[in-house]
Length: 247
View 1 (cartoon, one colour):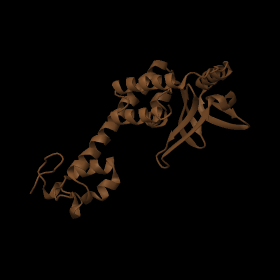
View 2 (cartoon, one colour; view 1 turned 180 degrees about the vertical axis):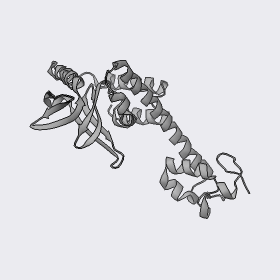
View 3 (spheres, one colour; view 1 turned 90 degrees about the vertical axis):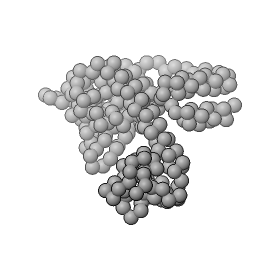
View 4 (cartoon, rainbow, N blue to C red; view 1 turned 45 degrees about the vertical axis):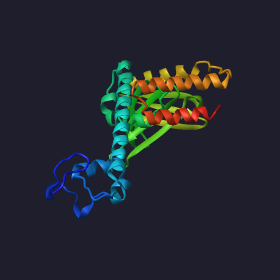
């Protein structure tokens, strides 16, 4: 039998996708492992693999690996931010699966400055504080990912309650109250006072500046992110194009 067109593994009955699912448009084939990778990268391509050439499939895999590498790099940066906080509770340990989702949730400009664990709307997760918002992240086993955010400029006040073992954090936003329960007793107080101090700070007045200079600065920041491996070449080009269209 022939070899896998992607990894050169010799194709056998035991490692070949069934019913010809691993065949490409030119008649070549892929092994079961490569077919699994293609399906992870793009299920629609895997489903209609016979319509694609080896070059097209290889490009799909390379783009997927590049994005996965960028995500891992971003996750490592986020974990470094969290480690620098030196939190004294178990939020970063018990909330590992939620932390792993943060690269898909946070913008590149967001920085984490606090985290607590708790229960919100019957979901166990973490409440993350960034420079722009609070975000409750719940990566449930049965119901997938749930995310709810509370922009700092919409928070009117934050309160906490403590019992014998646990505390509660109440986030007030324009007449609504979000209650995070089963928070570590000491952490509920510390987190609430931290956020209270943040929202009480005078808001910075942003003075309009020359749009051309602003766009150039943003492109330079994107270039630095690309050099650090946080952005891929494709993502950099796409964001740069959007910024240039503003001129």
